[in-house]
Length: 86
Image (tube, one colour):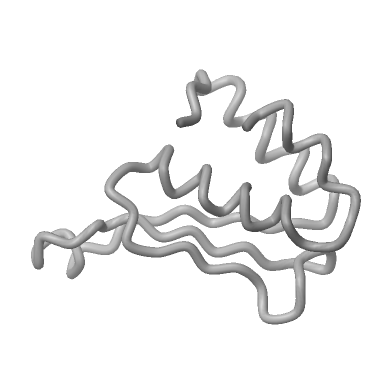
């Protein structure tokens, strides 16, 4: 599981943006009220794979972020630097 400080998360998001990635991590009120994992991450942008990446149903923010990063790491491209955060 990820163990990042707020400053490290900010740096990660800035690094992703510099690489052409938009990453949104959101909480979904409906999933929360239904007792389901409320966190969803959406990866898009010019460097994202076609169709983007969606990670949903996560119990925590960090689980959701990690799922999105691992999915991005598995796509074609120079994503080895993500290992610094994973």
